[in-house]
Every structure is written in C-alpha cells, then in structure tokens.
Amino acid sequence: MSIKFCTIASGSSGNCTYVSSGDVGILVDVGLTGRVVEEGLAVQGIDPRSLTAIFVTHDHGDHIKGVGVLSRRYNLPIYATSGTWAYAERYKVLGRLNPANKMLVRNGVAVHLEGVEVMPFTLPHDASEPVGYAITAGEHKVVIATDLGHVNPHVANHAAGADILLIEANYDKHMLEAGPYPAHLKQRISGAMGHLSNVECGGFLADIVCERTKHIFLGHLSQENNRPMVAHETVKNILLSRKIDVGGAVKLYVADRHRPSPMLVL
Image 1 (tube, one colour):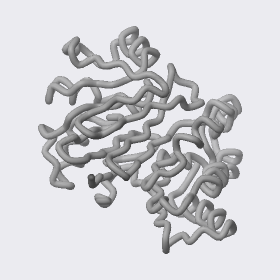
Image 2 (image 1 turned 180 degrees about the horizontal axis):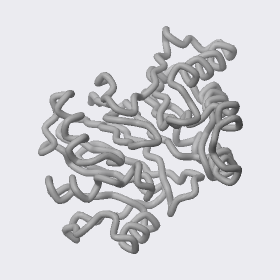
Image 3 (image 1 turned 45 degrees about the horizontal axis):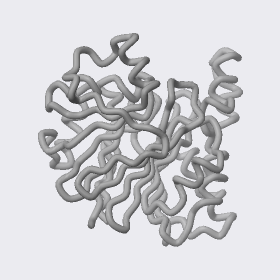
C-alpha cells in the first residue's frame, strides 16, 4: 500500500498534518481555522469531503482550534485521549459535536481504519494526556511527535523505523535564553514537560535514524525562539557528525508555519 504525507502548517501558531492511504485520509491536529485548512488541502488537490477522521494529539489551541469546525462541517469522527476530551468538554473548546463522532484513543491501543493502523503513544508534555501517532499502511510508517519536553525510550520505540518522521525542533537554546520571555516561561519551554530544542531533536534523530528513514520534517518551530535555517543547520550538522547521509539517503525539511509542504508519496 502507498502512503501520502504533507504538513498543512506546523509551528507555534498552528499545526495540521495530512496522511492518507487508499480511501483513508486523516488529519492529525487542526490548530488553524477551518478555512485555512481547507485552503491548504486545496493546494494539494484534496477535497475535505474525502477525509475519514481527525486525530488530536493534545488540548492546546495550536493543535485543537479548528477541530470542532471541521468535524461539524464534514461529519468527521474525532479521535482523542480521555484527558483531551475532558479538557475540551470542560472548557467547551470544540463546540457542539455529534456524539457519534467522539472517539477515544489510548496509549498503545491501535485504531484500524480500512488497512491503516494509527497507534497513539504517550508524550511528555504539559497538556492533558498528550500523544503522538505512528501511522502504518502496508510496509510504510509515518510518525508524528511534536510537543514533547524530552525523549524517553517509549517515544524512541514508537518513532524507530519510520519512513517519514515529523519531529519537534521548537527552539534554539541561545535565542530562548537571550529572548524577551519571562523566566518562568523560559523554564517551562526548556523543561522536561515543555519542548525539544534543536540540539535535543538532532541528538534524538541521530539515535533512531535507520536504513528505512527517508524523510525527516522538523516541525513546531517557535516563532520567537527559532529560525528555520537555524533549526535545519543545527540538526543537519548533528546528523552529519554521526555519519548520516543528510541530503542523500535521508532528506531533511523544515515544515512551514503558513504553507503546505510538498506531498510525499511512498
């Protein structure tokens, strides 16, 4: 089975990723307005009426903002953890939904959609039960892991062996330290339940890249504490220092915060 992948947008201002195989098309997170996501899908020639489901990683606005709108507009089931659902219902961030579209995911329990397996796995982040997703179709695997304060063996186990990996490279350490954020926010970002720095991201990737790894997307960059070129060069140099063929066997991209990435087809 072939698999298609693109980011619709990725950054601290909003996140949405598209993955499809056969007749199954899913969005992972909708942290943008419905209109912006529809426009991004249109750039790739995707009719939103062809979507199968939305999978939510966690409850922060840059991941959940437009979920309810698209679910109502296209009658899409929403898959999220019990912690995410509890937050969403308490603060009414998704609006009124069709009860039949409220679907639950649990760490380590796969969701099967017509030959596509979506495996949720817990991430260390300061949200209500956040998860990443490993999406498998036939021999191909896509892993989405953004918003995590550190990498542990559980995350590494699920991320290993991915053909396509979207991983967070949120901040540059020096830019964060010298920036205008208050001390408590800097501590939250750099803490164990915050976000990955460019260096931490590069080190993690160097440990798990294997022969199967073909495409790496650096995502969820901070607008204030990072730059696309800084993230790319930092991670690239770490990978090159570990004898990983960046630009050859392994392609490295930075996901744009405003525009869809090229569509990859494996």
